[in-house]
Amino acid sequence: MSEIVNLSPSLRSLNTKNSPLVPPRRVSSSYYRLKFLSFPGKISLATERIRAIDARKQEVDDSPVSIELGPISSESHFDEVMEEAQARMAAWCRKCIYLRPKLEKLAAEFYPRLRFYHVDVNAVPYRLVTRAGVTGTEARKCDKCFAYKPLRTHHCRVCRRCVLKMDHHCVWINNCVGYANYKAFFLLVFYATVACIHSTVLLVCCVFKNGESYAGNVPLKTFMVSCGVFMIGLSITLGTLLGWHIYLIAHNMTTIEHYNSKRALWLARKSGQSYRHQFDLGVYKNITSVLGSNIMKWLCPTFTRNTEDGINFSAARDS
Image (cartoon, one colour):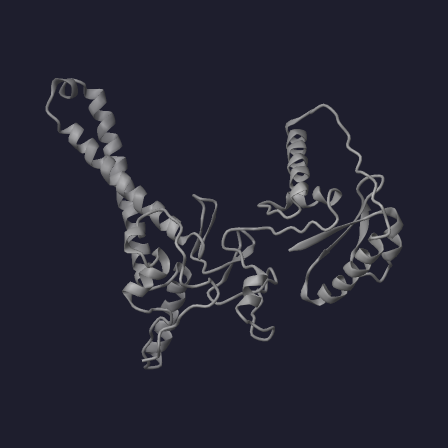
């Protein structure tokens, strides 16, 4: 999370060589920008700097931001204009949520204390960690992105961020499958499998249907047979994937945890001990932790309030 602060020219004296903030870069004729990243080591210094800026800013009247108008010359120019328009509209809201960090550099012109929360599906927010009561000594940190890393959280190399209860990175949805969207992904696979099986049955029935319109048209039958063979293969593939995730849900495991548990099981057998997945609470509780407690909504694409917060998970009792 980053915070952007605008300064008028009379406040440039606050910035020194020993300042923990990045030197301001000119944005317009009357605005300057200071940007800092809230890493743990700089939070206290940055807070003091913001308080000093707020105290001085009460005495300064900000001049309006200059706006330059011109023709749209290219597609990239059009994208820049649209991003700037979105940022200007968001400035009126004072508090807003962005899905893309590209607007961060544009909104520095519009509101001095505009805060940005780059929201991403399954991302690890710092507030959830502090709300869960995790202290600095107990909280793990990722070696790659230096973010707080709760239990069952893994770093995705494609998304370049840590994902809560990460299962895998899906190229078909261009996102990670984890705590926040695992039910949606499971229902996607389930209904896709049902649709493929239904299409296969319809194609097979049409191929073997008795009638002159089908028996006398050989190219049409050839096309339908080809589609039927393709749908059979797709149904088997999606059915296998669906069965795999049903197994994972029944054991309260992710794909990553499954492969890690195989090694743990091998080490336990090697040492003559028994192994059980620590989050396996039983089939019913495992299913409700993903699909919800209401059985009527298990196969409905509706929002389900999980019994877990994505950071703290119930563990099975040691036998």
